[in-house]
Length: 502
Ligand SMILES: [Zn+2]
Image (cartoon, rainbow, N blue to C red):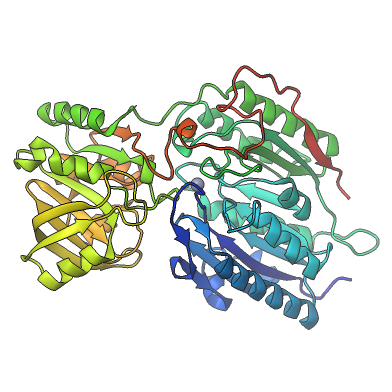
């Protein structure tokens, strides 16, 4: 039955969760939106095509990447989503649902959280509404998620400069489908769909789309998408820091030409496999001590600021954000201890240390024990004596934040887990990374602002919940064989999961 104006619900939970970090993500880590506030996520909401349907925003929860989500938090949001959708079904039904997710959520007790959520949603809305999901390319595509949705898409850029655009593509294709001529029985016409898993698990820092082979692999997608008979095509790198059977790369292709959908998926999957052992880190890598040695040479040669990524505890991928390997190394490093070099370390979460700094005030001195409380691996909390408080600020994500100085090093302590990824983050504390000799950030690949600032960059393969050296982490439950845990196997031809258009 066709309604005078189609109705499309919006919901989702957006987080990537490392199962290797001891941190548990709870309600306080999420920003939850409902109603108009939820729709404000979408810059396209007033576009003509978007105005052709009635949107029914239910609930969206989004967090900085973290640890496994507490079952209680997930359960409460899931219940609210299901109640909202049940009400929408009673009040006028639904033609579509926009599932706005990341795709790498882990929840206590679940192996496929998004699969669990979409299955429960289908049980409420039935099989007829057209479900379109937008995801991060670091999400995982389980067979359940693929089966229960009509269209899955993901970002085509890492760093994710096209995140907003990808959501629009998912929503626009959804609106087009619900507005299109229906089948004889009044049902929405579904595109054919193909899923091909590629038995590869790679860290995001080896798969930047700025570099080959990811660059060429992803660059062809816009041309594929406009082929007659193809609606959308996407490549997922998958999420490396969870130990679940669904974690691996995937290709999904959709369109109205059954044969073409199948062959394009097979082609993309085979291309990915052909490149599987050519992915390299986006920057030179080394231990933290090796990075400091290179930094010293760079500063001596006048190439500043030299950036180091403290990658193993990157909160942007799910690290606890309080591993102290890098901070301890910087505090002991002679060029900074002596004040010969200037350095910035951003950041480490420790609300108790921030409170001490706040109490002392700018210009005051504090003795604090920093970090090592959530992720307690060596070296653990770092004792800092007589640090000068150089700045205090309120950060929209990091909460109350403090900049403390020891010798030539200024290090940032935050009340909440946060990543210093933009120039604005540093500016809030009056810090100027471009004026420093060395800048160390808890991050993997440098986000665009930081990438612009650096005169040299290394990625330190520090330990942590998102260790870039996957073989050190101890995956036990991923499906095998899987590169790089297994090598020298030949998975071709890769099986295609295919559903014809109908
Ligand atoms: Zn991502």
